[in-house]
Image (cartoon, rainbow over all chains, first blue to last red; front, side, top):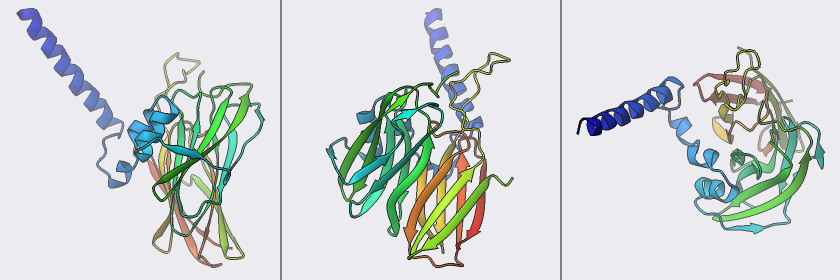
Length: 157
Length: 103
C-alpha cells in the first residue's frame, strides 16, 4: 500500500515538473499569436502525420503546378535553400517537409489574399531526403517533391 | 536588438520582401562540444509581415529552419513608399520587429 502511494506521488510530482519547465521556457505563454503554432504538427514523426495535424487531413494530390527549387546535392545539410512556387489559384498555405528529418515539418507559411504563391527560405536536413511541398487551396491539398542529396547532415552534433 | 535586415522592392505591382534574421535556431538536439550538455531548443516560431494593418504573411517555423533564417516572398497591392512591418516571436518569448519602406 505504501509503495502504491509513493508511486502516485512520484507521478504527480513529475507532471507538475513538466508543466513548470514548459512555463519557464515560454511554451505556455498565454499569447493568441502562439496558439496558431501547431505543436502536434511540428512534433509529428512522419510526413502524413504532420500534414494531418497541420491541415486536418492527409489526402494530397500530386500537382505539376508546384515547383520546388532546391539543390540536387546539398554540401551542407544545415543550410539548404528551398523555394516553392505555385500557380494554384487561391493557395492559402504552403508548407515544407523534409521526409527523413526526425520531425519532417520544417515550416508553414500562411498566405494573405494578396500574397503570391511563392516562398523561399533555408532549411536544415539531417540526410538525403525528399523535400515535399504541400499547398492548401480551398479545402484541397496538393503536393510535389524533389530529392536533395545531403553530404553532411545538419541536425545533430 | 536589431535582428532583422529587410528589403522590400516593388516591380510591376508585385512587392518582393527579402529578410534576414539573426537568430541561433537551436534544435535542442545538438550538444555543446565544450560542456557536453545539450543546447536547449531556441528557435523562431512565428514570423508575421503586415502591410497597412493587413497581414500578408504568417510563417510558422520549426527548429529545422537554418540558423540566421532567410525568408523571401511576394505580394501585390503595395506601392513604393509604403511601409511593411516584419516581426518574429521565438519559443522563449523573445521577439523583435522592424519596418522597411518599399522601394
